[in-house]
Amino acid sequence: MSINEIHVRAPAKINLALEVTGRRRDGFHEIDTVMTTVSLFDYISIESSEKLSINFIGPYSQGIDPSNDLAGRAAIELAKTIGREPNVTITIEKQIPSSAGLGGGSSDAAAVLRGLNEFWNLNQELKDLEKIASKIGSDVSFFLYGGTARCTGRGEIIHPLKDLSKLRALILLPEVSKIQNKTATLYSQIHSNNFSDGNHSKRIAHRIDRKLPPPTADMVNVFETVIKNHYSELIEYYALLRSKGAPVLHLCGSGPAVYLWIHQNAKVEELMFDFKQAGASVFEVFTTNRQDAVAMKTCNNDVF
Image (cartoon, rainbow, N blue to C red; front, side, top):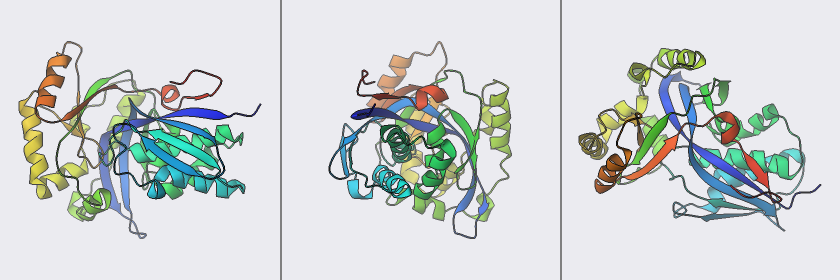
């Protein structure tokens, strides 16, 4: 049976640890990170059309160039691999802020690969999609899996871990000026004295596979040092958020979004109000399992 339309959701991620372990000959950095998907999603629909068209809607759709977006590249690369034209319209409802460290663009690309694999009835195995994903972006392979994983290499080598139980968190996005070419700029400010051996990520991975919560002492992020040394505006804003009830903040990727774990008895509504009063965008999320992270539905079913 042919499918006329398919709906896929693309989750955001947070980093439980992010270490840079060295510099590669190709110019990329070797990383060792543990990531988990969370319940903040972009929503993607795919339907047939006469040519490839990428459309963005939703609260975080402004400023995205469809001609330079990873989702479009994913469609083009997959179509090239199987020898067909990418004649689809892809509509992405952006609920994940861009350039925030939450992986929204990479997640959209992975969702398009998964969605088109189903939509075109390709039956491509995950390892085949991974080969395409690694050409598009370092985090795209992780989002093909979803759930929780330790990622090494450029981030494209995936070591799936047991799913985290539903841990509750608040993601806070500061209202600050965007850093131009953020990822490349921040990586360029990492030096050999910022390298580590990956043991923080290793310990977190071992804890998760024993179904234990990640230890706070190992939840490090190399970009925290970079931001501390170069971006005083962000440091001042994080200090403001800490004064509003977030004593321990963890950086999402290269930022500027941060998150804090929420305990069972926390007064979440009061916290969210205070953070919003401080000018932050606030998202209440839970860690997601692998099945929920990669869910999709055809047009014959209700959308998410």
